[in-house]
Image (tube, rainbow, N blue to C red; front, side, top):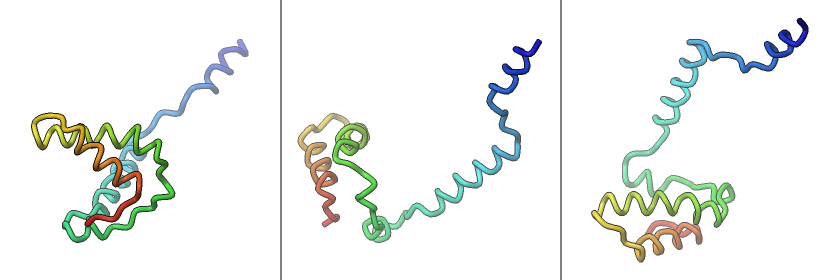
Length: 94
């Protein structure tokens, strides 16, 4: 039946062990490039053209809220607003 052949062509290819290795290598490479020293983190250039204010407000704000709550033990909306505002204005760390 020709319909069965069409179904086989619509299936997504399975990832083999080599694909998993490539992905693991890419992730390891990315992790190695992330700065860890405070001076390097603050000096790391950010391509602000990549981010819109809406993205910062919608996505990054959730992360900021989560991290500040983890660090402080409770939500601090004023601190979250302050950090999100700094990011939205692409302010350099002081």
